[in-house]
Amino acid sequence: MSDTDEPKAKKQKTSKKDRKSIDSKKEKSKEEPSSSTVEVPYEERCLAINILASPLASKKSTKKAHKLVRKASSSKSLRRGVKELVKGVRKGDKGLAILAGDVFPIDVISHLPVLLEEHNIPYLFVPSKRDLGAAACTKRPTSCVLIKDKKGDGKEIEGKDIFDALVEEAKEYDPNSRKN
Image 1 (cartoon, helix red, strand yellow):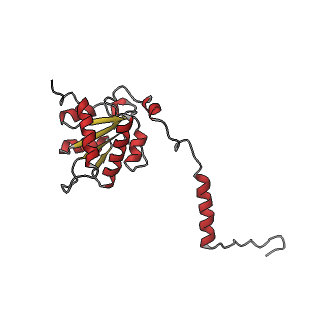
Image 2 (cartoon, helix red, strand yellow):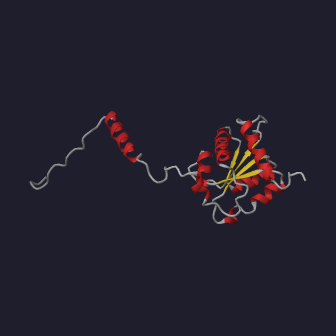
Image 3 (cartoon, rainbow, N blue to C red):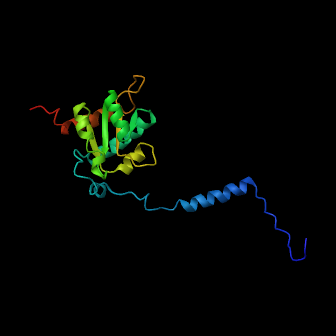
């Protein structure tokens, strides 16, 4: 070792408790409100919907739909996304379809209302795919979900009263189920 070489400074050891407190301080600084966590009013979300989004759920029905999607997600009676929804419909799954109204390009979901009407499955549109994805317990926005009326083992889903209310509302708009 020459005179110009200085010994390297040793890293200071920190205990686990100190590291955890440092990490929690970093997390708290990251938790400051960002633009993605700001609640957007229902009326503003309705401005971004496409022309296909009919029947659009009311503000109250949208909250019910999100609550039902959350319950269905926790009980594993939910199909998320276009591919899964189409696969479930073709396999014979029945239930309620909830579609997002702000999906662009519109061609992604333009075939779904016709497919759902052919299979006599009621459907509703909600204004935001981001909110629908959050309700489905995913980090990604979800364009559509199918809430199956029965679980795989034949038991009823949680929130059956909310499910029935939303099915009735969806059938009010369905041209096939109207009586002349």
